[in-house]
Length: 614
Image 1: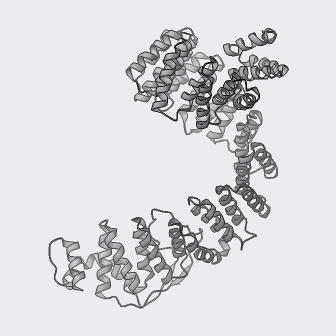
Image 2 (image 1 turned 90 degrees about the vertical axis):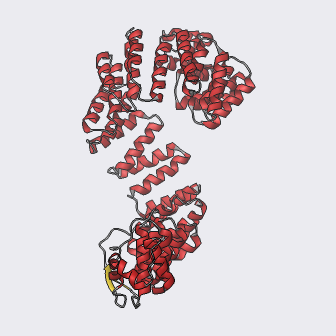
Image 3 (image 1 turned 135 degrees about the horizontal axis):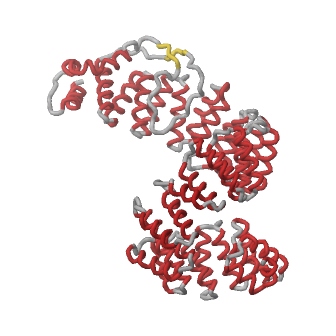
């Protein structure tokens, strides 16, 4: 006992000496009072609602009890005398915890918990140990807590969470089985909580096996099937995930959460299959708002804009005060070139107080540009005075001036702005260079960007744009030097590899090297339409037209761009599919009649198409 007194004295008073436990207790009796009161009835039993005196939230979330009114139950307390030694250790632990010294508090509490088998002490040790991330100690304390109070749902959940946290899944199984079996009235909700707890575990295959085994005794519980489906999907067991999701929907056909998961699983294989499934689900369950929202988004992803817009309008009718849905309808209207409807929805979104009002103002400026209301567009762009949309809005403001033949005023406007940081300064420089490029002042744009690069030689955005300007004035040496420096500074810059490779391929130079560069870009960004176009184009240059066709068709499917249409048509032409090429070019020319690459390609190969459009 004297050793403990010395430890306590040093802990409380530093170098001062307290020679007796009685002296120490006199000094700390007021601090220790809450602990003494808590253990003063050790020889009794306590009736408390489960969870009322729960520990503070630990760093790692525990499984949460299903929300329901707390039920009184008897918490077993040990018949242990409150000795001076116990009070001493408890007081030491509490003061250490208050002083942020868990390495002192946790061992002291564990010692008392082992001696007394008191669940309250074990719970307190668990709380402090977990908060301090002393996970082995927390697990020992939680195990003691559960041994002292075997019916405590919170203790069971805590032990489970700690075992999972430490990747001891096999050890967790009996606790999980008991937890699920003891709460069959809420077993479905508990499966969903368990799925969330296990989702972050690294061994996805082990989690799938665990959940499949735990779900086996509950074949009629839809949540159990969905938990298995989610685990199977995370483990890349696609067929098993779909089978389990279908079973969840068979058990509960109107369950929107299961339907959303089913659509997500189908989408991995085919967007069309996911769309077909959701279309059927919302026909049967027209009030399933989240399913309809996901259906609409999938329609957008495959560019079925008219159908998507109809779905968003239904959603907007159900939720007229939802600014995000109004924005979705507006952007789809813009894509459909229905600018009057777009403006109506944008104004509506702005009145509802959207998350990003400056984005709405930007779109209102663009809509008014398309409607040839330049003055109105300028007002909307000018209303964006700060934030992420500030530079883009001011760049478009300058673009309107330039389109009016006021290039000098446009440049002056950009130069008058005060950038908030280096990034905004670079964005303004690029915007001004864009004005010169749009005005076909290619040499001036090249010189202007060259001066910016000289001031900031390691700015990759400036280097890249300067390289693109160099191509316009046939300074391929500068283009290559800049792009290679970008690659050196940012090895994952896919478009730098692509731009260099495409430039070489388009000039029929160093084709094997061009292909390697473009393939590197493709590995970094496999679904980028412009990189797919470049890959198809270099293969065409190498005479591999059948292989080139697939890449170009995929590129045009993702983005029906004028230059991609020119390249795709040329490969079709080379393969003898000339009618297809002419139809493609005629369609593209109606939308991109001023694109020089498209026009020159058609003029060279099928001038009759160009004449028919004109």
